[in-house]
Length: 136
Image (tube, rainbow, N blue to C red):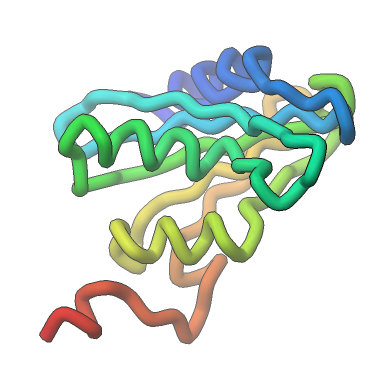
């Protein structure tokens, strides 16, 4: 799957966001090693703390279905669903990614128009720890 195809799926996922409080819609598309893709959107809650991000929604759906080997994720977002710049994953999402993904896991941060930035998880979350270090 090309980055552009994964990004298109993230943009489509963004349309499903439930954001009555912030108005910021976020979509994610997670590519598994076997080629399957899981989409996620952010889902807000009136008390804010239970709000869940698009990235975690996609990852948790994949994990529920038995997937643990992930290749890449595309993330996009913006006020009222309009992408005006990149929308990087929050710290909690980065740590969830680290639980399942290697340092070279690819993260596509979608910008305005057709632009996107390609980063690795180690660039987004340097000096991190993973389950692999704690399971030995």
